[in-house]
Length: 232
Image (cartoon, rainbow, N blue to C red; front, top):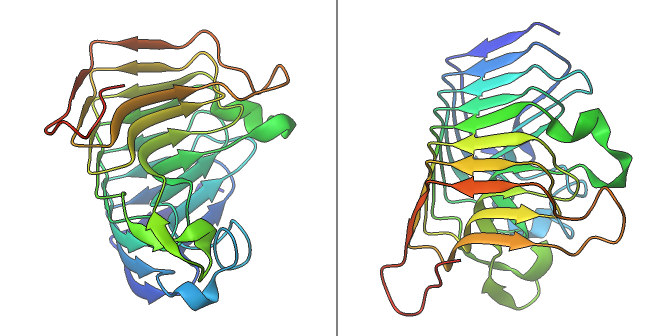
């Protein structure tokens, strides 16, 4: 609680670069490279289940954490994963993610039916650069036949609600910005280009926490640079 991790570096880590739980914490100015890139260490979604292959994992039911000004490069699963309300993720550079596991993002959060920490309510994702998340990775994070990964620049997953996504740039991903079963999120003034799909909103939910409603997508710049890529 109320901890500061600043100006640190990690390289060639098997599981997670920085793993921090609690509230009012800050991770600032760190450089994290080569996390969880060895396929044989992974089951479906990373070493130790879905808790491996991440540059930064910060969580806490009371939230109010900050992740700012970090450089993350070459990770097996997610660049930055956060859980909890009022989290600020800003001014980070995240590149080359989902090298091993599938279905992840440069910046990622997930809530599910438990509604952990209010679904990230009041969180802000702003002014981040997220690129090259579309990797030729092992299918579902195993050593089975390889396929292009479902790596998104920004991925708000099941039950995420009331998050502001603004001023980010996403390029070279499967989805630039992906809202999956989310509610009341705002995506504004982002640039999304050269992704397979620039913006993706998908409703697969079957309960009130996992259906899409009330989000706003306004004043974004989205474009494809070739005929194979979609716009939205």
